[in-house]
Length: 472
Image 1 (tube, rainbow, N blue to C red):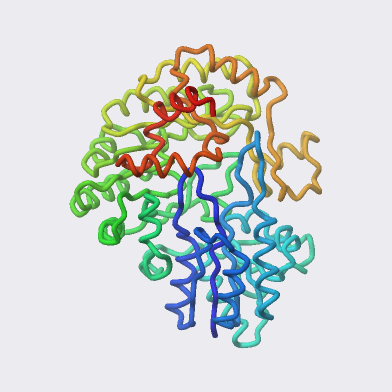
Image 2 (tube, helix red, strand yellow):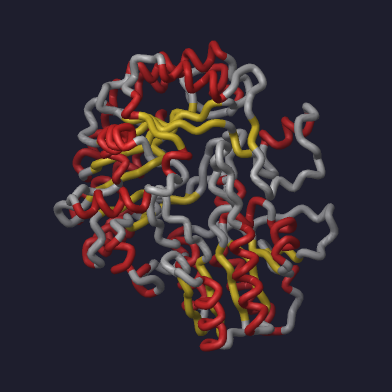
């Protein structure tokens, strides 16, 4: 059976991302004995034509579409990616009668609704390595695909709850060779980082988060030696950096330290090491020492708020005291730091905003801040259930189109004014909208030409200063 996997993500702001999930699925299907090809649309200038060409050339029996994101998660300038995906589906249909199977993190959020919008019959939920291979075998044998755990048929009754497949132990999955599936030279030319997982799953229960829908609540750990092999492969492939892409980094702490130690022993000299989801609760002196040894150059700290009221409403699992302890400990980390704050969550008021701004003002003036406004509401999350119970969201709303919650007790304009009059440097602040700015790709190329080490948000103060001078 011939299988064509199409990685549909073409978003390259704020950075270019290697399609890790699609590569994992392609690798699992190939190891299971299927003839697999992967079409990566990231750099495609004519995606419809490229899809038609690939389908006609391979004549696949099954086409798997990997959909990474539903939208850009920007409440100020929301943009859905689904119309672009629909064009890809139409291109496949034009050239082939092959069954189209939907998968990827976006599909797991609203599988039935997205499948109906795209006109597809089958969706794979959660981690797909096991369930997608099971689906291929079922189709090959003429069996009912709906009997495969993790597979959802669009025509299932509405009250049939979608269930992801049972998560696999990382050690049971084939070791991944990304260069087998995508052109790493093109990604290296864009200074993309090699994505590396140290684990899957997340033990936290944040009210808005979809990670548990994808990976479950139990930490499943990769062997630290396997993590270091992936890091070494990045250097061999010519990549300038690696990025740990766990749902959260740093927990369990013993395992995170072991991974850092293993990477420190094998990582080529000069490689940038980053993570964008460092959990504040993990920021102990022991972990920070290990991160320094591993050569971390940048970290993102997912603080979300400096107010206990808001942190509790989002069920973050840490407190403002934890944030202050993390901030003190992180002063010993030899890396650029970006703190991520999300304004407008349930319980947000001017007082809670002031508490967050006060925390921002306590940060070192070399630290950076990323601001998002509003909370994207996803199906099957605690936030969605809460808003439905409060009559703030129609229970029939499938939430496929971007929908954001913003506390009625404060406005984005008011938040921005409170930040503007704070003592934290304005040039050290970015928003999600800034990251999607039309000039972002040009700035990335300029930073690369100047020899800056990715990720380029480290140069945010200089970039913001230039934008203000040029008024762009």
